[in-house]
Amino acid sequence: MRIEIKVLIGKGPIEKKNGILIVFTTEKRKNNRANIDVVKQLSKYYSVPQTSIRIVAGATSTKKVVEVESI
Image (cartoon, rainbow, N blue to C red; front, side, top):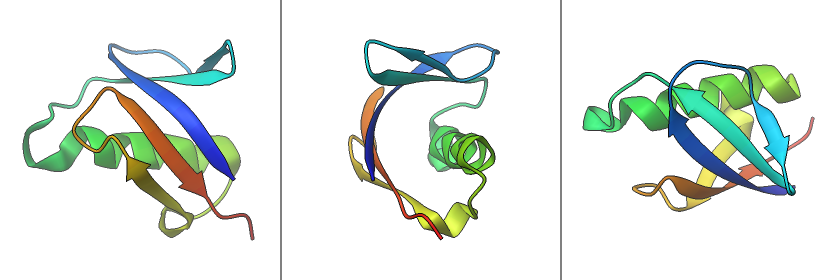
């Protein structure tokens, strides 16, 4: 399934607003750390391994499209 997400700086649980998931991270964008944190949070949110989640669009943007493969 494909999901649109928006990444914001800060702490908090994943929220859903207007069909878009809002994911908060305190990690910096340097060395892809923010994206790694987003994938970790989404894997917990959907109860799937991190390898089942990949960013298909927006790797350098705050707006992303993520694909989650269900088991």
